[in-house]
Image 1 (tube, rainbow, N blue to C red):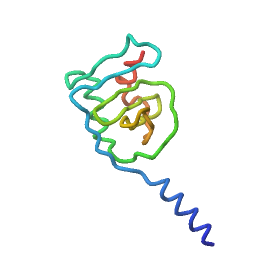
Image 2 (image 1 turned 120 degrees about the vertical axis):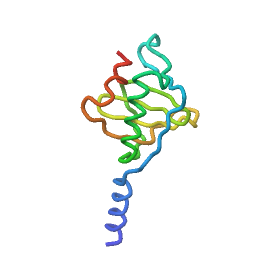
Image 3 (image 1 turned 180 degrees about the vertical axis):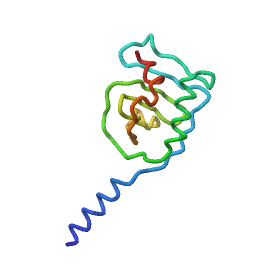
Length: 121
């Protein structure tokens, strides 16, 4: 019985979501894994920066812990996080380590952040 309670408590801890206050710095670097010519800097004067900032403020809850590897999309760096935006997810990376490590993930609704995702096309 105690084993069942232990397993249930692990599932509850894993299924809980986190609230994050993600602030973009004055400049966000955008990287594309397959085409370095598409790398650029975004500032508050850019529509993509504003769209990402608005999305992060509106989606500050519902983040789930992750440690996976994800392919595709665009990768952005801010002062505190790396942010990968794929067709279906936004993934936050810790950039304080020698190698970026995925730490949180949130599902991305259809059409959300399409202007930012299209920076990689």
